[in-house]
Length: 239
Image (cartoon, rainbow, N blue to C red; front, side, top):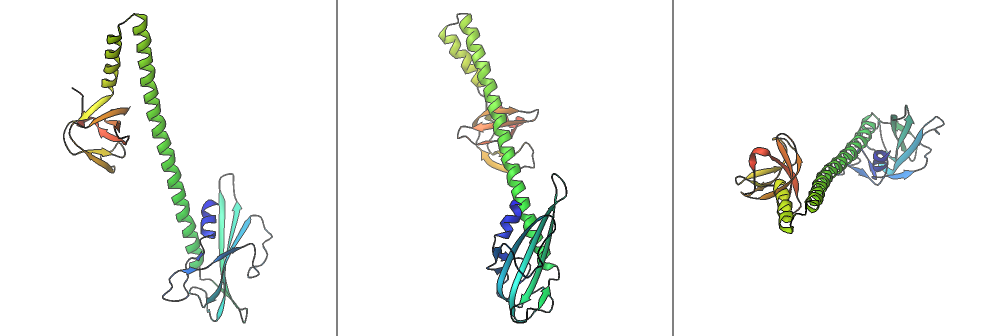
């Protein structure tokens, strides 16, 4: 429905032209109903978009004169998570009220526009979910490290360790999660794959914090807050 609403309100009749120099028919408006279609009394939700004062638009059979293009979208439910979308398009002359049916190009183009919007919405949602998952994973690693540090502090305090020993222990824990780049030009990847996009090329000895550990890749955080993935062979412990 979100994708349909975007196309419904984009002020465009897709899949037809009025003039060769005007490849896109704009100026369409959303209406609650139109007499160009018979009243819809069947199940489902119905939406309409019209474009007035169109002159002989393409892909409507035997068009002539000036008239109105109307597009109707019918959405019916066929299950808990599935719907069916049916699209009709018609052009009716103002003077003679002669109707001209579409050859299917307008309906197919409108459906393609909705499909493109749907894919864009799904891609954005997937990217947002992946970003949340990565953030939660990084937060979990940080929380685990913090818990370990607190446990170490409690053990050291119970054993009446000196302040110097306690600080040394904390530095050791920090050192365990820090690495540095072995050679110049190592790529910071967007995902743990050699074929994934490169975010940045890092200078030699660039220090990073390991937040995710896998057998072959480290999920790391740079000191500027940037995140990415580096192959384990390209990192070494700090001296």
